[in-house]
Image (cartoon, rainbow over all chains, first blue to last red; front, side, top):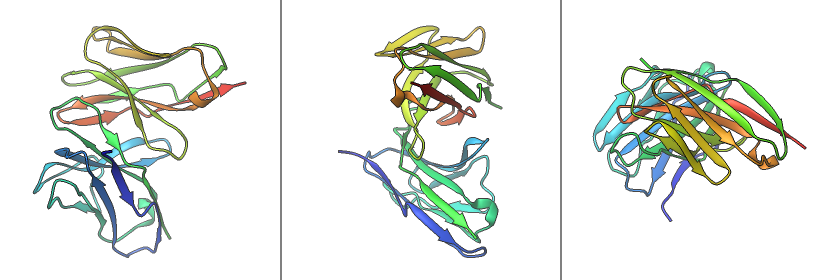
Length: 113
Length: 108
């Protein structure tokens, strides 16, 4: 069955370190998204991609970067982790025809000390 | 821009009916989606309304009124497992903008 996975599921790191969160989908979806979820803020879009070699900034992109070298993967990198980036991160994908369902990964809980 | 409003919390008893409202302000509108998220879990898709009216899927129904910029999710015959957060969302191009979420607590 097609799925979307994230790794690691839990991560503890220190301020200033570079961290990469992996996202892999086997839906063959064009669109992939990274969100962070914090109490009181719902889901906020960090970066998104509409296809290979395409990346775009979302609402809260500062301090984060992504790259899309193939259809299946969209890794999220925190260049220099900050305590404000402690959050739950969700990756999602969709077909890419607009307005349809997004499928979410299980999430990564990141703690920056 | 896009903004959505939902009540932060709703409480109901098992077997009851509950309605979760969502009002939105958007520049261009293509439909309203609903997602469910259990504590510690990922959001999962429930429904999508592109047109006015009621869409029914089992115990869950979703309603949209485009003229009022308003929609709601109706949960019938509530079960304990329905305790979760519910998010409305609107498409924005090929992205989505999510509401802040409504936490539903179902009491025995």
